[in-house]
Image 1 (cartoon, one colour):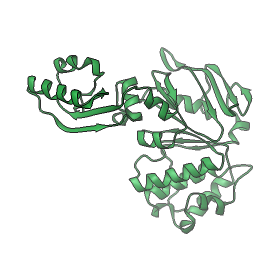
Image 2: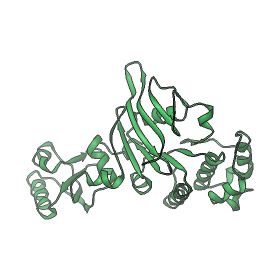
Image 3: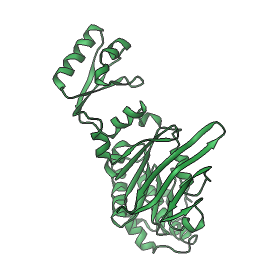
Image 4: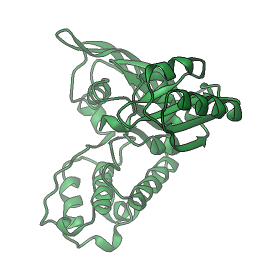
Length: 307
């Protein structure tokens, strides 16, 4: 039987006519990485803020560590760690001093030496915050979220703005925390990050959960072996003749994606239609489906263009 550390049932938060969160339900397994995906305005931030205790829901049930509660209060917050998308740190404090300052806030906390080791900043303990790289600052922010030894860690866009190596270093830290039994609730704009890290993904749009599952199952549900992605300034006539291939067209970037089980015939059709419509095809890519394709098929938008 699955051990759920957090359960949300029929959560609602309305602002006048705006249904920011409209009947959201999900369960989070203990010791897993749970990712909430959605375009801007989907309701994911409001949902997370309710679970963090920053907002009060209009309706719904929250079951935290097996206990049903009306809202997340101080008792539950002792077991929660939060890393916001933007954290302003004091530039003239050292890494160790910053951790020391946050440590005094909580009734229970980890040893700072242990936290430094977990975030791989032992050699930066006496370095001023202002002198840290972007990746090092982000690791420090995760360390601050960990200082009270929480059971659940909320990470909002933890790798935004980092270079690929720093992003991978952050992934290693998150996977190590998971191995230690921590539960991580993640929001991200990087689909490869969600696909690589997540045990479970919930996709939100217009205040509702529209699809959920583990990344592999969500991708498998597309029921196509391959995708053909091309750069082309497609017109409505061309798209109409491609209807059976479930075309997804990103007009902003002029990217057309077609689902297919027959690469050869689909390519031939695409070339013929482009010639008939006097359209030039560029940058042809044949690949396997990924989580970005799931998101596109459900919302009609690329998550990255929501940035």
